[in-house]
Amino acid sequence: MLSLPNSKLVQTALFVLLALNLAAFTASAQKASHVPAGQTADVSDVVKHPGQYMGKQVTVQWKVDRVFSPSAIGLEKNEKHLLVVSVEQGGLPSGEKKGEPITATGVIRNFDQAQFEKDYGKIDFGNAPLAKFENRPVLVIGGHGTAKLEQPIETSQPETAQEHALPRTASNLPGLGLAGLIAVLLGLGVPLFSRQS
Image (cartoon, rainbow, N blue to C red; front, side, top):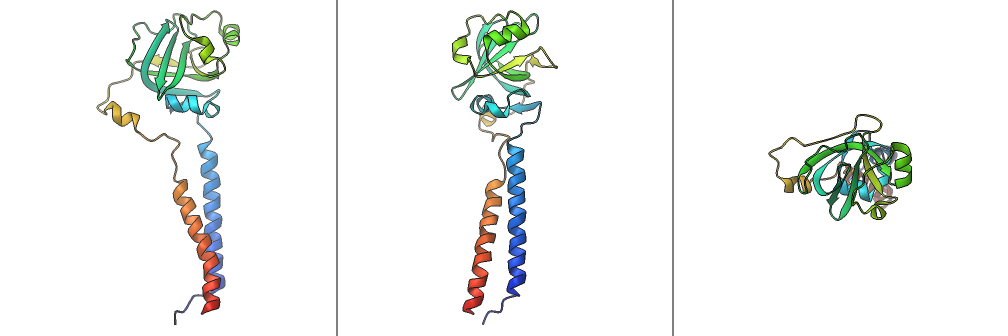
């Protein structure tokens, strides 16, 4: 016959394990919803989840999809379009071309042309389809802070590996959830097994 340790002790240990899993889950969920200022962000993630980035300084690294004017370019990834607008005098560095890699640091704002021109003065948007970007996230370079646009340093990592990299929001929550589920099942199963013995 199989002897079991004190069932009260086992139940207490399983309860503590479950409580620790819940605490870790809550902490991880809060961390995932907070995007620290100055973090590197994926272009498509900014467009899909603007609430996580709104009002925060972020850096995006991708390639130019369109050059609309000396002050506005478009980035596109996975059919998600992000407008990048420079509000600095002189606009963006000259020579930006479609397909060139670029690193842009700025603040994510909701695009409202009237509000932008009220805050920054007249902006040359060129042939940008502004109606398409209205009330969408836009990366604003310059104005307040040290936002900038620069050519990235070439790396040996191939572009395909960068495209398939996991987003920085990935977490270990599935593993914690599985451990919690096992703890609950064991907590329910030990008393039943004790009664049958």
